[in-house]
Amino acid sequence: MRTIYLAGPEVFLPDAAEVLAEKRRLARQYGFEVTGPGSDEKDAPSGVASAHDIYIRNQVAMDAAEFCLANITPFRSISADVGTVYEIGYMVAKGRKVWAYSNDHRPYADRVWSDWHKSEGQAEKQGKDGKAIESHGMKDNLMIDAGIALGGGQVLAPEAPVADIDRDMTSFIKALDLMSKL
Amino acid sequence: MRTIYLAGPEVFLPDAAEVLAEKRRLARQYGFEVTGPGSDEKDAPSGVASAHDIYIRNQVAMDAAEFCLANITPFRSISADVGTVYEIGYMVAKGRKVWAYSNDHRPYADRVWSDWHKSEGQAEKQGKDGKAIESHGMKDNLMIDAGIALGGGQVLAPEAPVADIDRDMTSFIKALDLMSKL
Image 1: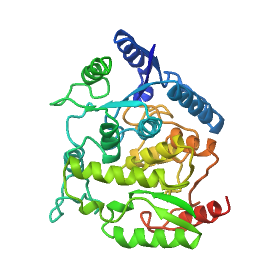
Image 2: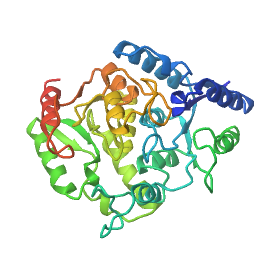
Image 3: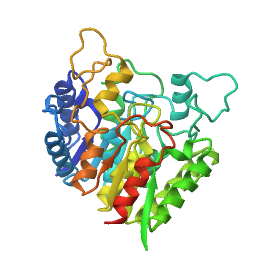
Image 4: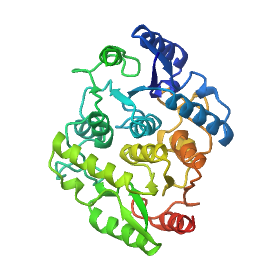
């Protein structure tokens, strides 16, 4: 059985249970056994012990998976959810087959410009915070995109804006289809 | 020689060269040989080939290091720089000794509340985006904090706001001091 770890910030959605169930159903349809964050984490008790429990559960699930498909759609920022990014780095280091998708069609550099509103006199590669903007045509920070690509994976994204950026399944399904043929 | 990978978003600062040189000087003072992102990346050519070159250089540097000290101060968001987070996940997976520090004194949940302005009628564990807010008293997403802690590392932070959040070295030095005794 081919096991896939589904990484992403859906666990934080108010309808996390429904969205995660649909993602799992689709992944199974493409021949994968599914591991990854459950739908109960947003209701987990506060505190360190609970956080460590969740971490250990996720790490066990990652270690058991041959594949990882990560949702790097921006989360509360211009970049992916950092929990998801941690998992991408972890899985690349473990030599797993890691792919990702973003439901934001824009490259990172365009996103910083659009969301941050260029000020007069700013250099082209500098944000409003005075810090440089990576401009490699990638979907997010180059460590994510390049780490995935150099490991043989792909980062997919739509060509145009999607209606529901948190729940659109088009790129997710496209990735599952391609990964099912690996 | 004990080699340390210094991860962080300083490479994007306008004075990256000076800040990185100072961090390297301090790490050497605590007995470490230093690897990690250079100060030339913000001036790197655009495009995929350049991004892959930088990635490979960073991965070689990570693989050569026994220790990792990551700056997880929020970057253009309420969370750490995603490139840095990728490296934390990577180094934890490789079994390295990973520590981190944030120059933001607030736990993640407080930061989301402060920076996102609670709206009337919102549930206590929900952001203005309707998504759940992790509330475990951690500095950032639990995958980062718990991954480091369960690997034997620590996440340090100041007790009160610092004057220059992008350049303050207090927690960095404290971490180096503790790590030099490992």
